[in-house]
Image (cartoon, rainbow, N blue to C red):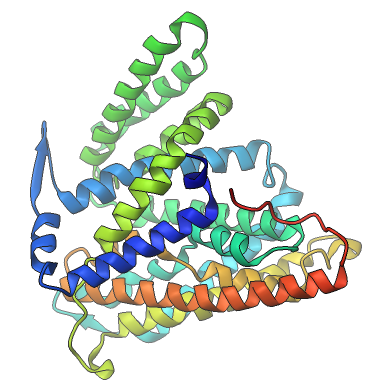
Length: 394
């Protein structure tokens, strides 16, 4: 199981699953796989397609793990004080605003039969933590650990922004009764998590699993995206048992859930059209992810450094910010989810959006590989003796 926890392995599985999905979708097996993806399965009163069981159901487990990590960083980690959080927070905000502006520059006034293309503005705002840290682990031998810590803090805050975007902008006509009941079950889940000890551990654990499933159903029924249930449960769970559960779930998330989602999301038939016939949304995402994230994170990181004492402003040099900016352009998992939500009723644009996310992330992966390697070589030349570096992946 330890190898599946590796950041390198997680990134490799994600990339391989997405590439396989895109490849198979464009073979004779493509139509059969798409038909399977759109096959509806019922579980009690919940009826969803196979694709939505993956993106709305299984992906809630991934968001639970993200929320546990976010809570740890906010309570005891690199974001547990305003002084620590302000620098990566400004960088994260810059890494959201600039990609949105670039995307809007391509799509303002553009529309299709299914609606306005402006609706896709959240797509290039996300950074994939697993992929970014995976690239850093592969190419960053010799880099100081503070770069990894800064990237992790930035990516966690980026995920928090993405969670808020999903909760606020992809919720329509919420069922307030179901939402209120979900608040009750989430509170009960949090209380029970503080009683997980001694002989009562297993009965309480079973009850918590049932409450988690009920919470997911209530959130789904409320009209809020069901993955928010995982976020809420992760945030209210007591830290120590939450960390143990997230640790136990991590191999399943890295090895099954995220690759399965990447495979499903990448089941896209490449359109046989000239580049000039691709939608403005495609070009907006393709440019906004690698370029917007690079500019936004670097500019935000530089502005954020001004909040630190003069003696500490060089801890993350400009070359480090540029490198982190290239890593931030790897949108992947959350960007693919945003694409599905933003263009849910526009199949053609959604397919082009998926391709743009994959291509934009691929550009960022290649650019980040070169940037991280170059920066690591420079650090190794400047510090020939062993330097506290980002921990190697298992």
